[in-house]
Length: 474
Ligand SMILES: C[S@@+](CC[C@H](N)C(=O)[O-])C[C@H]1O[C@@H](n2cnc3c(N)ncnc32)[C@H](O)[C@@H]1O
Image 1 (cartoon, rainbow, N blue to C red):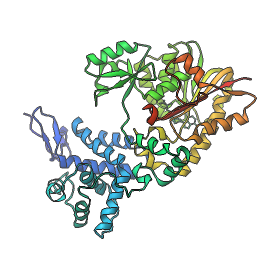
Image 2 (cartoon, helix red, strand yellow):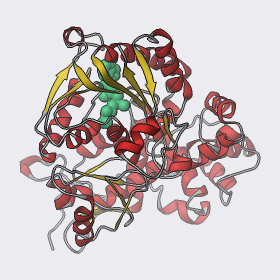
Image 3 (cartoon, rainbow, N blue to C red):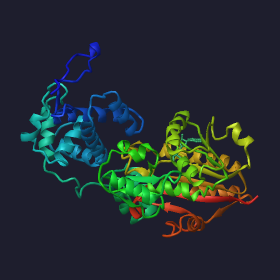
Image 4 (tube, protein in one colour):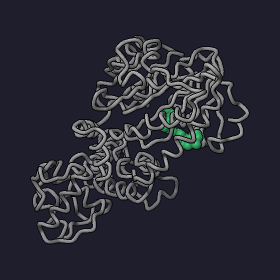
C-alpha cells in the first residue's frame, strides 16, 4: 500500500497531502468527515465573500486543491449546495436559536454548516459534534460556548416551521416573494416550491453524429439509465442518479452534450435550417450554438457573438468535440458594435438568448436567488431592450429574431416584447411560437399562451424559459 506523502509544501517534487487525509485500500486519498466539513466551511465562506456564481468559485477551489479526491469533492459539494438550498431556513433557525439562548451572533459559514448538521442531519449536539469540531489540523475548530448553546437549542427541529414567513419557506429575498405573489397569485407557492428541488440532468443528442435511439442504447451500454425527454425530440433525461459524464466515451466523442431540455427547445424554435445565415447574438459558451449548428447540418453560416471573449473561447472546445464546422466566433465590443451595422438585414435567423436574472435556473444555481437585487433587475431590463433593438437590425426581410431568456419574470419576457413591438410595429410582427412548434417539434403542444413559449420548472420540469419569435415584415 503506498504510504502517505507528507511534507510542508510538496518540496522536492512530492505532492503535499494534508495530514487529515488518509489512504484507503486502493491507495487513493480520502478525507475524514471532519476534514470534509472544514473544507465545506471554507468553500462556503469563499462563496459568500466572492461576488460571482457559486459554481465558478467551487471550480476554482477544487482546481487549487487537486489532492481532494472525487468522493470527497462530491461530499463537500453536497454539503455546500445543501446549505445554499436551505439557506433562508437555516438562517431563520440560527436566529431563532440565538434569541432562545440570549446570544448575539454574526452569522458565518461555520454557523450555517453547524445548523445544517443539526436540522438536516439530525445530529445530537452533545454526542456528535465533539468528534467533528476537534481543532485538529484541517478540522473545524472546537465549538465556542455560544455555538454549542445554539446547536443544542435547534437540535431536533424540523426544517419547516409554521412561523417562518413565506419568503423564508420558499428561499427567496422578501422583495422577490412580493413580486412572485403579485405575479402568480396562488400559483406563486407552487412555482417557488418547484424551484427548491434539484434539477434533473438532461443530455442533448448531437444529430451531427448520431440519433436519439442509438445514443440511448450506447448510454445504457455504458451503464447510464436514460429516458427520452417529454418535450424535446433530442433530449435524454438521466435516470441513474449521479453520473460522471466527463468519463463517458459518448460525451468525449461529442455524441451528447449536457443541456437542459428547455435550452434544447430554444435552439429548436429558432428554426435554423441548412444553408441559412444565422447569428447566435449572445452565444456565451456555445450551448445553443451547438444546437443551431446541428439543426443546420453544418451547412450555411453561423456566427456566434458575445461581449465576453472568455465565454466564446470556451465554446471552441465544445464545437470541435461536436464536429460543428460552420461556426465563426465574433467578440462584440457591445451590442452596438460596428459589425452589427455592417451586417444589417442579412441574416435569416437571429437568436438573442439575452442576459437575464436566471430565475428559471434557480434549481441549478440556488445561490443566484440571493445575489439578485431590484437594481440588478432594472439594469438587466435596460440591457435586454438594447440587445433586442440591435439584434433586430441583423434580420433580413422575412427573417426572424428569436428572443429568449431563462427568466420567469414577465418584465424580462413578454414585457420586453410588447415594448419592442410598440416601437417596431411597421417592421416586425409577433409570429406564433405555437406555429413554429407544430412545424419543428410537433406534439405535444407548445406550453405557453400559444403566442410565446413559457416553460416553468413546476409545470414542465425544465428550467424556466421564455421564447418569442419576431418576424421582419419590411
Ligand atoms: C444567457 S447567457 C447565454 C447563454 C448561451 N446562449 C448558451 O446557450 O450557453 C447570456 C450571454 O449574453 C452575453 N451578453 C451580455 N451582454 C451582451 C451584449 N450587450 N451583447 C451580446 N451579448 C451579451 C453574456 O456574456 C452571456 O454570455
